[in-house]
Amino acid sequence: MAMNRIQFQPGLSMSEFFSLYGSEAQCEAALQAARWPAGFVCPDCGGAARTSFVRRGLRYWECGACSSQCSLIRGTMFEATKLPLNVWFMAMQLLTQSKNNVSALELMRQLGVSYRSAWLIKHKIMEAMRQRESERELDGRVELDDAFLGGQRSGGKSGRGSENKVPIVAAVQTTAQGKPLLACLRQQPHTSEQVAVFAAQHLSTRSIVVSDGLQCFRAATLIGVDHERVVTGGGRASVELAQFRAVNTLLGNLKTAITGTCHAFNFAKYAHRCLAEAQYRFNRRFDMRAIFGRLLHALVAAPPCHERAVRAAEVCRQSGRRIKVGRELQARRLQSTEAHPAARPLRLPDRRQAGNRLAGAGDHDLLAGLHAFEQGGQAGLGFIDVDVHARASRLVRSLSI
Image (cartoon, rainbow, N blue to C red; front, side):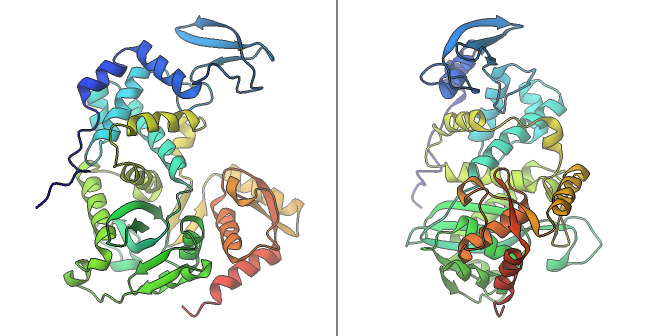
C-alpha cells in the first residue's frame, strides 16, 4: 500500500516549537506580528502609536490620535487571561499537531495549570476555530450524510428518535475521483427545513450533492444543486459503497477521536465546538507546519469570549427542537416583537446583506435569512416581515418530501 503523503508529513515538531516560541518574549513578538504586521494600529480610531509602556508585566500602546491605551491581547481571544502566553501557545501546539485530539485533562497535565484553566483554554481555542469555519462553502462534488453522537446511556428510545443522541450532518467536498478535499460538520436535526438551510449556508449552487436515500436530503435541491440519490439499504455493505467513502471515513475518524479522547462530554451543549475543531484541522491538514500560525491569526481575529459565554450553550437541541438559552436574550427578543408587532427580530450574517429586508430575496437568500433568524447570528440586527417568514416556511413545506 502506498504511503499517504498527507498523513506522514512531519508537521511542527516540539523541538522546533520551543526554538520558535520557547520564551514569553518570543510569544509576544509572534502575537504582535500576527496582529500588527505593519506596526501598532489603534482598534478604536486606526491611529498610530504615540508611545508604549509596561504595566504589571503587560505592554501597552497609547494612540497618538485618540489617546486610548491598548494592550497586546485586548480585543482578541487572549483578552483578560492571567496565564502567560507561552502556556496558550503550548496548548495551540498540542491541539493542532495531535493525530486525534487532546482532552482538557491531558492539557492540564501538560500545561501545569488547573483543570478549569485547561478546559477554558481549550474551549476558547475551539470557539475561534468555529468562528473561522462558520462560513465554509463547499463546491463541486459533495458527499452528504447523517450521523449521531452520543447514545451511550441505557434506557430510552432507540434509533433515530433517541433522546440520548445528538444528530449531525457531514458534507465532504471531493475530487472527481472521490479524494476528500474539504469538509463541513454541523450539529442539527435531520429535517427537510434544516437541510435546506444547511445547503443555503454551506453549499455552492454549482455543487453536485451525492447522498443516501434519506428523504430530508432532497431539500438541498432548493438552492439549485444537482442531487444524486443513492438508496443504500442497510447493513455493512451500505457503509462500504465507493460513492460515500470520503464522508464515511471522516465520520469514522471523528467518532474514534472523540471516544478515544473524551470519556465524559456533553454533546448536546458543546458538540458544535467539537465538530468545528475537527473541521478546522481537517481542512488545513495539507500543511501541518502552517496550521499553528493560521490558528494564531484566528485567535487574534476572534472577539473576546469570556468564561460565562463559553459555558453557556448557544443553542440547546432537545427532540429536534431549537430552544434558545438565556432568559435575558429571550426577554430582549420578546420586547422587540412587542415594540414591532408587524415584525420579528432577525440577525443576519455579515455576508447576507445585514440589516436589509428579505421581501424581494430569492430562495437561496430567503433560506439563509430564515436560518439566521433561528440561529440568532452575530451581526446585522434587522427585522423580517411575518409574511417573509411565512413565505420561507411555505417554500420548505412545498416540497413533496
